[in-house]
Image (cartoon, one colour):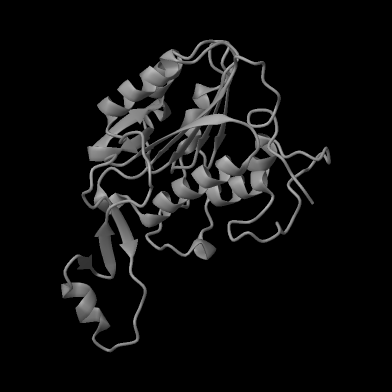
Length: 267
């Protein structure tokens, strides 16, 4: 079967209007920036480029274009008996992991809070009536047990944005611009409070409830092992699995020949 992304990504736009995508990802330091997060950002970026229609895509990841090592990757096992010692003492490797610079070919900036907010405010200032915005976050989140509005998105250099702060950022978006956000981090459910927004123009799709951890921060690079929200959500939209195989079930629940963001969430 053939499926399509509904509404936000493929619906006809009036001539002056445009679609915008923000892909925000990474960890708060090199140790927390696992390879799966990087691979998710890469995959979603490439997948969205294959969908018909024009859209402006921005990628904000870790330390931006700094060439320093910022991603932790698991090394493949070797059969040699000295493998444990190699992993422990080999230069650039720690207990089976190595650290390297991210492989995202073009980033628009890093995710350190101050710099990121400035960039996003600049993007918001350029939005016009009728434009549409999709925000995808792949990274880590933390829980505030006393106040769910204190649940956070963790950003580079151990900075963060909590629910209230992200809401304040989105209030700058013109009321005529629909906002859709896909948050895949642990405790993401707290960010449901961003919707529907003061003008009813926001809708979110969240990997977990506000008090539960999510899957998606492995250091391995074998996509066949990934079982996270990003992998299934965007597979439903593309009509193929992460490994380019047919989907095991049809996510088009209402049979209209299109897969909505909500149907992708249910899948």
